[in-house]
Length: 105
Image 1 (spheres, rainbow, N blue to C red):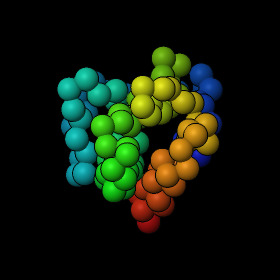
Image 2 (cartoon, rainbow, N blue to C red):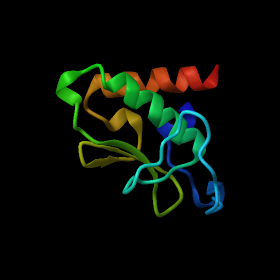
Image 3 (tube, helix red, strand yellow):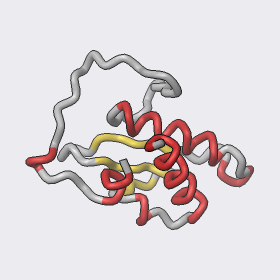
């Protein structure tokens, strides 16, 4: 999962996603939310819970989505990033790293 967050998929690596996927444990797909793979949605959910501990981040949108080319895009505070390392807030980067680590265990 960490590798996916740090590089964009090439066209050969793009994965088709069935439209009928059902949510799995710890994933909420809210109206208007961009959709990513179920694994990325789970990581997003854990990271969101970690970010909720920071009062100054409450209300800032954090979302993973699938880019038009099939790669991962990360949205934070209405700005699109192609990799977690591009996000300027170290707390967001740390929350994603911790979420990825817990997902990989």
